Length: 169
Ligand SMILES: [Zn+2]
Ligand SMILES: [Zn+2]
Image 1 (cartoon, rainbow, N blue to C red):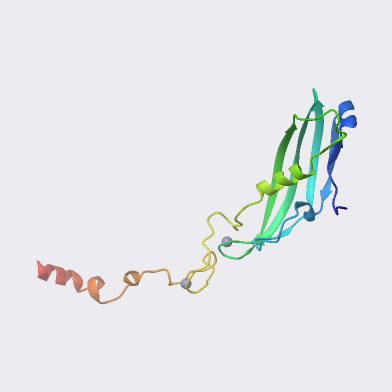
Image 2 (image 1 turned 120 degrees about the horizontal axis):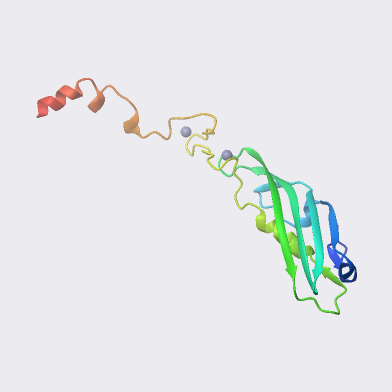
């Protein structure tokens, strides 16, 4: 099967000679993400990695940078999240017969692990009023107020209530 994005297959023969440095951009399709409605767009993924062989084992270190677009889970505003990811992979079971080490799936997994499960415009987003739908970050509404909090001139808050209290004693 031909793939539409680069595969990371490291030649072990080359790695044995010298460390390998790779960098570039990956299309968002690299993540093979099913659209889930929460993450609406993914930028190209910048990657940088360095692989080296240390006594027959391979260490791969590097980082990714990408940004995600989506809607805040509380207020539905559009949000962009920048996601820097550092990773370190270690392969200690390398057979002498292997010609290359395919780290494509592991790299993908490193990114998928870091994807947020919840997109918020800010940690303390107040969200939308469940009654009138007003964005509570931008304005306020009266729905949330309990009826007894609304000032009135009758009842215990009226100017006469203090006198009433006195009379009852
Ligand atoms: Zn929000
Ligand atoms: Zn409201």
